[in-house]
Length: 119
Image (cartoon, rainbow, N blue to C red; front, side, top):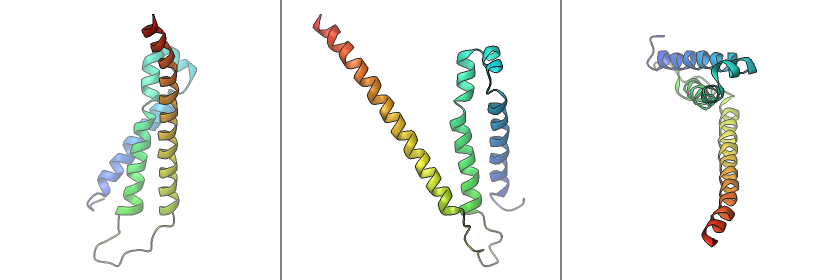
């Protein structure tokens, strides 16, 4: 715990755990009725923040944390490449879905704008 960065990475992990519990406990119809639609949706969209916290926590322990600077480096962790691949695939899917949604919304607005301008 005294090593530089180790405590911070654990704090990020604990915050992610607490945030994940809140999101998990409110992922039901009863919570949606109690909180109301917009508050519930805002809370559930925090899953993007949760994902970023989990990625930051994992990046630290897979790529940055070393046991001691006075000893030789330990062998590479076998989870580094699969983790990097999962992050790249996830970000690619999110960006692709965003662009597809943006294009679909844009194409729906164009006929409406053309109709308004034509009148």
